[in-house]
Image (cartoon, rainbow, N blue to C red; front, top):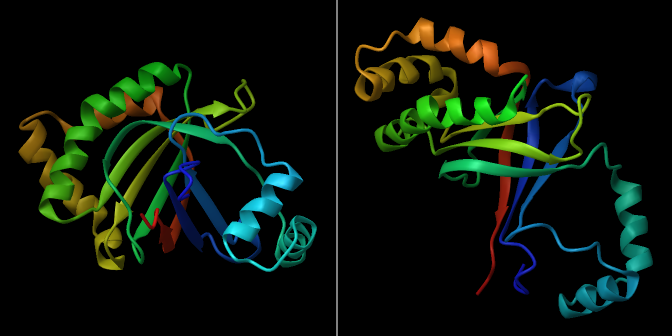
Length: 207
């Protein structure tokens, strides 16, 4: 991170669903300044480990990773709008969506939900929000095409999310009918799966 290869990492621990139904116990989210660089070669990893004063070779490091867990999936996702951000001990709700028109879905999220999210952060009910579009893999069978993230400062904020949405909605959208707007969203942005995580660590550059 200090080399500028990426700008932040979040370590997320799955809260709901838990047990054997959970796809992953932990999720690591890495933020890059642009597209990710090419994967490190063994020599580059050896060099990075030495610079970090980690007394392991690349082979030993990879063997330890395999011993402690296995990678379930990986993808490249680009956020299209970002409000606020996550801090340690926040709760993060990830909503995976399918859409017949991802671009239109993102535009609708930015139109209706971004100002709502800004108001909710201002009110102290959330710490952040984002709408994302999956870049790779990308195909008809590669869901989610679009995802949103809601970040909560504590458990109480998560459990009262719906109440805080209705309160902020009146401030931002006035007399616009909430149910009608949600019906419109449902046609373009269908939530297929939601996972709740706890942010157990946030890593940023030391410089």
